[in-house]
Image (cartoon, rainbow, N blue to C red):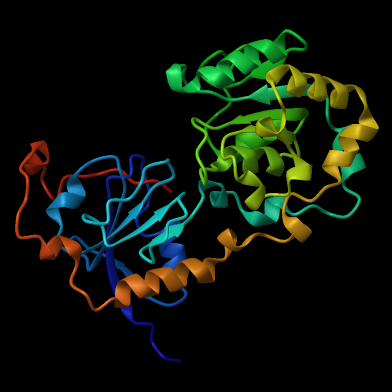
Length: 311
């Protein structure tokens, strides 16, 4: 058996803790490479939560689950939510962190799902701000018709917070008919884990966010805020569906993916091919090409300072 070639990588500026040796990107690389985590990498994965990446002159891959745009004068390649006419960027929506197997519907599962629905609607939110005001307002308006259970840290009305993590979150959500899957902003391409978590729990998603979400998922399988003339019409439709089991089943019988098959954003070969291109790119890293720099607070950083990573 031919030995896999080594690839020397590291991570910084992501924001939450991670085992560097076993995460989303290492699992993509492992089928082709012998992945080695080193302090002086040939390839650095970094995100928007810090400036440690500025201390590296190796090849850099910017990756974010938020709506940030890449700066390809700092990074060589990028994974973002955005569709860009640039071969150095690849769209990688955050919802792909929810395994596609959880979103594939079994034949004739809808009736069994409905039997287990004892709650009306739930949602999670951690904070309130001007950016989240639309979903906060919608929560209050829908709650005037029927109680919506808020299980996050903010607006909590169930007397406890559901533990962080996909498994406990899905366990809580499964008994609810609807889930408010509202993004932080409405931006083309920006589809996070919220709608996919609702689908995995077999809730009927009430979605607000990416106006092009129908490119990712079958629009007949969820309620899209953008498809209604106003909030009153959307709320009337939610209440109508809640009162009519046959109507609810119509939505639940629709596959989330077109043809009930994962879309191409779940294709790990697509992501691996992109990373192979980044690794094998013969051009010098953009950080090594700069003949000038602008000093800032980041210069006080230490390269070996512990930093935080996401899973």
